[in-house]
Amino acid sequence: MFDCTCCQTDRDEVHLTTAGLEKHVVLTPVTNEFQPALIQIAPDTAATTETSLTFEDGSSYSGQMQGTRRHGRGTHRWLYVSTYIGEFRDDEISGFGTLTNSSSLSFEGQWEHNQKHGHGKETLEDGSQYDGQYEQGFRNGSGSLKYPDGTTYTGDFVAGQLEGFGTRKYADGKKYEGQWRQNTFHGKGIFKWTDGRTYDG
Image (cartoon, rainbow, N blue to C red; front, side):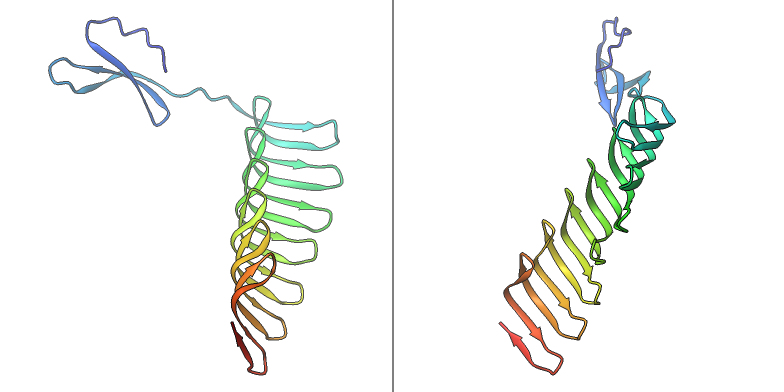
């Protein structure tokens, strides 16, 4: 709480914290209504600066900082490996940003505590493309996955695997719609062939 030195009166006086601001208020003895005092203090914030740094491992950072921490928008380049352009918070990759590397892998989306978390779009090592939800670094929740041969999957993911309910449309026209577990059909589903045959079970 804010230590106010102006509370040297015979009235009832208290401190309140509202929306991150500390406010000194006076409780009048007659109406019991709160009357705002003239003092209002915002939380301390460090100044944001633009900085370029090179680290011992050869990686580099250029962008905004608060004190000694990466904070705000910036670019971090790891030597011969990958580049991240986006938001940082308290020296961690947090917010919206794009990560690319020398193998043409890429991710664009939300981050939290240096991990993919929230909605994102990713190009995987085999050329597959994912668009959907992430949780703590894994594809988790609803999303869609398109394979290099044109096959697609739309549905649920758990810890990076096809799991839950989803639909796979094969490049040759076949289709499966139903339950999945650990990337395989599991449970009730409907499979349709291009010649009109259908399996439901």
